[in-house]
Length: 304
Image (tube, rainbow, N blue to C red; front, side):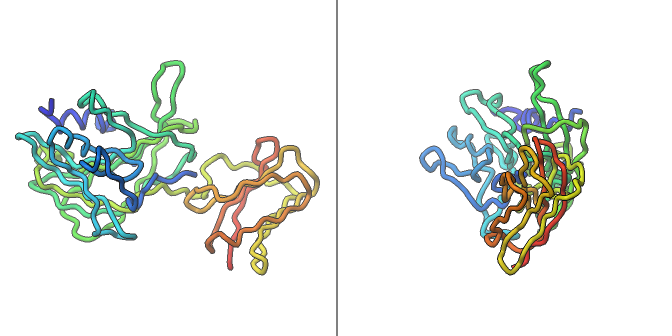
């Protein structure tokens, strides 16, 4: 069943070779869980080939305290099982071991809009010309074809040894103006590279993978309605919104610069004050909507 593991997995999990809000879940790899009664472990929210340890295969993903930030990072190492390569591989999705190599279930639901970049930090120790691969794809289900369309992707391969944590920053290339509903992120310790095949011992460390949004809000921002004012009041740790006149279905949305929604409140009156003292100091993006349509957006600085 495990014959040609490397080739089959790259065909199944790296579709970009055949053709780089909501942030990446547990992108700092701080949270891990023991599975199958403690037989193997994985980062929470991620899937890996460690599940193959249920049939005595080696585990290729490990929690490492050699972290760029926080307590832990993910260590991905290519290993051998009866002469077959098993790359260190992490992906957003699920795996049904009953289906063998056909059990990969790629992607998780995504409501983070349209991020601009896929970022993170890495170290890499390749063997004999091997390379590592990281990529992210955004998909949307197409009811007409009953398949997922690729909305955007960001991808790269790492070649050569990198001994200290080094940032990577990949721009998403968009192929559609639609909003994605699924995200698929894959990290692989072996992608063949110049050697033409993966190599046992190639080791990739990854930490702090995330999506970045140039505006902080990836959904469409339109309009600059007159008579709408948003002001932060540092003395009281509050945010005040003033409307020249009531607007039907008005609400404010406040996002961090990483695209995370931190506040959503209705605006039924002409003046509203919201407590933001619990938010970290820094820049935030606000968006005012009326009847579901954006009418004003901008930035506000929260200073305590």
